[in-house]
Length: 336
Image 1 (cartoon, one colour):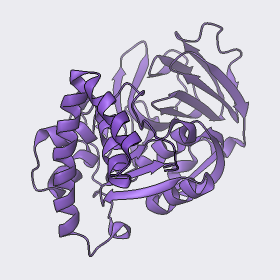
Image 2: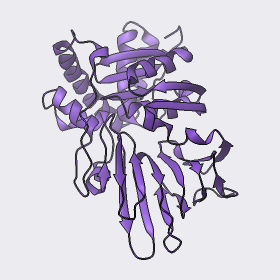
Image 3: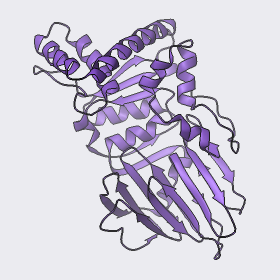
Image 4: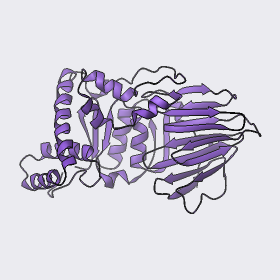
C-alpha cells in the first residue's frame, strides 16, 4: 500500500463499498496510525458510514467462515451458476446473489444487500433473464432473434404499431426482421436505438450505454446527449453515451459487434472499469474495483469469458494492480 495513508473508497459516495475497502486497508496495515486516523475520520463523518461498517464486519465474518469451509478448493475451483432457459414473465432471483446466499448457508439478508446492490425489481419485471455465465438465444414473436448476454434482462412489448424492447441490465445482440410498418426500438438507460432490419449489439453498463452495429443502419438518440449523436450508425460503427451525456463514436471490424456470443471479449481502448464489469457477469461472485485511478485507465485486449478468473487476473496484471481473493465469492482489484 505504500508509505502514505489512503482513503479507500471514502469519496465514492457508496458507504457499503467504502466500508469493505477500509476492512482491507486495516487488515493490511493494522499498526499504521495514519490509516487508523483516516479511518476514524471517515467513520465519524456520517451515520450511513457507521451502519455500513457494522454490516461490512458482519459480512466479513460470514465470508471468513464460508472460506474456511471451502479453502481446499481455492478460487480456481469456482464453477459458474447452472444455466437454464429464460421464460417469459418468470421472475427469478439473480444467479449471482443466489449462488452467494446458498454458499454462506443462508446468511442474513443484510449481507446480500451489502455485496450485491442490484435492483431486484429488474429481475421481477423482465420478460427474459439470464444468470451468471449464461447466454440465451430468444426468438421473438416477429421472427427477430435476441441473444441475451450473461447476467442480463430484457422487457419486450410488441403491438400493431411498434416493436419495443427495454434492456434492463447487461447486454443483448439483436438480429431484426424487417417490418417497414413497425420500427424495432431498443431502450437502454435512456439511449434509444431504432431500426427496421439490421443486426446490432447494445450494452448497458454503470458508466453508460454502448451500441455497435454488425450490419444495416440504426438511428441512436439519447436525452442525456445535449450535442446529439450525429449521423446514424452503419456496419462497424459504435457509439458510447456516458451517464453524464458524453458521446464517443468510433469504428471497428463489423463482426466485433456481439462477439461475446463466442465466449470471447474483444475490447479496444475501453476503460478498465467497463472491462471488469463485463467479466463480472461471468464470475459467480462480486468483483470490487477499489481504485478509481485504475478504473479509468484504458485497455485493449482479448479475454476468455469462459475463464473469468484468468481474464480478471490478466486485466489486473496489465495495470500493475493487486488482485485479492477475500473469499471464493469476492475479489478486490486495487493498487494497494
